[in-house]
Image (cartoon, rainbow, N blue to C red; front, side, top):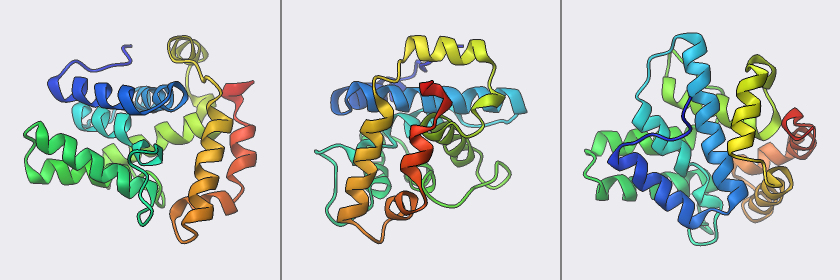
Length: 194
């Protein structure tokens, strides 16, 4: 299994994510894609791989200083980054909207694969990587190869600090509810960090 996608849009998303995200956040984005891709293969789900890849690589850029909005939740800011990047790549308006939706929905209530497969895959991928949800469903050799290629690099504490900062500054955002629901404990207990 490859951890990247080789299209013009995918290369641009990786370039932007690499430029703005630190190693911990970048590797998380790639692992989120990989977990989602593997889940889709294991469950026979058809999806738009380029759309999913671009959304996965950009989904947390709203947590980085250059894109952190003082008025918008980080996932909405990240969705706007995706819209701007994909507009520059010539994506039509409806495809740009989809990229934004996938990023926004990754922090919302569960989205079933039958409703929106790409959003479902990003939720599965990010949940596995952030807190270890469903991680036992993935083959141990797959996990070992993924972590070898894209190490955690202290991701848990880095991500906890980022979402706690969002929660403090934006008390009505999804990150605030996530933090209030015990995110720090779930992140710290992630078996990927064992």
